[in-house]
Structure formats: structure tokens, C-alpha cells
Length: 451
Ligand code: AMP
Image (cartoon, rainbow, N blue to C red; front, side, top):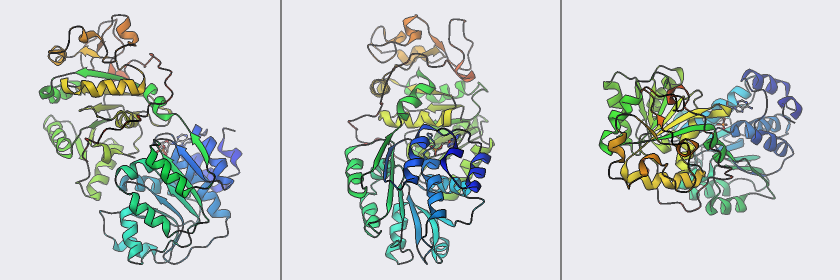
């Protein structure tokens, strides 16, 4: 079964799905939709980009349509919890698209925006409430929201919600839901904390695992550029000379760093915006919209802010700094390989970051080829142990390029015929298969990221 029409979905939903341009189901959808339609609880290990939103939204919409439940004042029939405002908004947009020919009512509750309109929207009750945990709990405590009649609960990006310290809020919210309900939990990774939460809230769940981390890592043509820390800005300017890098998501470690890089790009005449936790919801949304429409070429983001950003057609992800967690790396590069599309990533690695790069390569079980043909490479490898220049950072397996003694060229520079295609033109497809099953790190290090 690969077609949406095989699922027994309402015709209006099918029409909306078709208009969204979906033809076949993604793996997570194939597995999750029938199970949810059957009324099963679900635990799904899936990342953003796998089509997970439709995997829970479509059967949920169907169940709300055919079920006997009614909207109750201040209540919701389905509750979807998400870690960030951006993700909540995106889920809401998707649901509105899928339900556009239906009379289902949905609304959003999240922090960082006025509570009054949210309270007002809940007065008569809704079918679907999409919320971030903190603000939702506030409004529940103030008796503006009553979730005593919830039939369906979805936790999206559960791992990130726990990372962000929402466990208590989630527990308090769930304590106020009916115990007979259908619960779906989605998480990109399954650390013990999420497993424990799942065990406490799910009943005989169907377990689904799509292998997105490895898949993502394999779909993206990844390269690393060695560069001294102090010259990363120049390298960025150099790399962006290549116009093939037309929709570029740049990751920095800190909010301050994101602002700085964005300012510098503007000075270079490259349209850009920064998006991070200090920005108002309006500013973030505006930045996202401009990036989506192509008005801005570069969006500079921190990890948390970028989480859940759903922008199609990102041509390149640039890691201005290498993340210290392999998982963040996989999340970041996954932004350029949405729903089956290919993409490229360029990681700027200074001397101190090599250990992180090694961790990443271990985790994705493939080396990241080094692009040598850019002005800062020689300086970038200076001080490195002898022989490091031509080797990917991972010991053991070497990339095909490295094995052949090839070096890759940076975008914005000329390349000799032995080099893979220019990164700007899509970069070499990553042919050095890893056969990696999972790329989730077991031993998380403390977060270095601030967002
Ligand atoms: P998600 O993992 O839910 O964030 O979805 C990632 C992207 O894939 C979104 O832009 C969706 O609109 C898109 N998408 C979801 N399901 C499909 C499908 N079956 N075919 C094509 N695109 C899809």
C-alpha cells in the first residue's frame, strides 16, 4: 500500500492531500496511518523531513470526522504538543491545508505572544489544539483551557521537549487528560528519558522506526572545509560567491553569533536574516516567510530556533560552527534534504572542532570529505598532525575521494577535472555508502548550544 487513496480517507482530505502535491506515502506514513486509524497507540522514531506531520495529522483528522466526540467549551478533542512555536505553527499550517475542505476547528497556543487571542479562540472549544507545553499549562491553570475531554494526544519531537526541560509541564498536562485516549509519540531519538515517558503514557503501542538519521546523512552531499576560526567569515563570503548557493541555511552556535553573521552578510550585500530565541515571534515568522519566498538568500539560525523549520528547496546548509552533538549535525543537514530531495552541506571546521567532526563521522558512519580548494585550507590545516590534510577526519574508512587521492574543490573556485562537481552545483553525491543503520548518539554530551 503506497497510495493515499488506499487508506480509506475522506474524499475531501484526499483532495487536499493531492493538492499538497503528495503522490505516494513516505515510509513513516505507510506504517503509521493504518495503525492510528485502527485506534492503536503509537511510538514512532522519526525526524522532521520524513513526513511525520501528515503521518499523525491525516488519520487524526479522519478519526475526528468519523468519531462521535463533540467540541466542548474551553476544550479540545485532539491535543498536539510540540516543543517550539515554529513547529507548532507548522503543524497547524499543515493541518489547515489537509482539512481545508472540512469544518474542523483548530487553534494554536504558544508562548511569546499575547495570551488573549488564544484564550478567546478556546472559549467555544476546538477540535484540534496545537500547543507548546509552558503556555498551555499556564492557560490550563488559569482555567481558560479544560482538557478533560481530549480523545487524542500527540507528542511531537518528544526528545526535544524533554531536552528543553518540559517534562514536568508535560506530566502535569497529561495528568489532566482522560486516561482513555489514543496517544501518539514522535521522537527523532529515543533516549531513556523519552522511553520512560512513553512507557508511562502509552498503552500497548505499535512501535515504528524509520531510519531517517542515516538516510538523511546519506542523501546529503556533505563536505567539510578546514579553516582557522578567525577566517570563517571570509570563507563564508568566498563560498557565497557561488550563486548556486541560492537558499542557504547557516547554523551558528549562539544567538549573538547568528546576529553577527547575518549583519556581516548584509554588509556584503547578501540578503539575510537571523532567527533565534531572542527574536519576537513576529520577527521570526517574518524572517521565515522571506526565506521561504526567496526574498532573503541566507537564514542564519541557532539549533533550537531552526528545529522544525519547514522550508522546501534549501540548497545548502552551512555549519558555520560544527555542533558538538552528532544528532544536531544530522538535524541541521536534514534541512536540505526534505521529503526525498537531495541537498548539500558545507561544514566549516577549525582546529578545535576536529574532535566534534570525528564524533560526527563515527555517528553517521561515514567520513565527510574535505574540500581543499579554497583560499583558507592551508591555514586551516596548519598545526594539524602530519598527513591530516588529505585525510578525512575519521580514521579507518576513507572517503572514495580520499582513497583515490582526490581532493574536492570548494564552491566559488575553479575545479580540476578530477574533483567532484562543484558543491554549489549540488556537490558530489555521497557515494561512499556507510551501510549505517543508526546514527543516533547514545552518549550525549552536555549541550553547548545556546538558542
Ligand atoms: P515533516 O516531516 O512532517 O516535517 O514533512 C516534511 C515535508 O514533506 C513537508 O514539507 C511536507 O509537506 C512534505 N511531505 C509530507 N508527506 C509527503 C508525501 N507523502 N509526499 C511528498 N511530500 C510530503
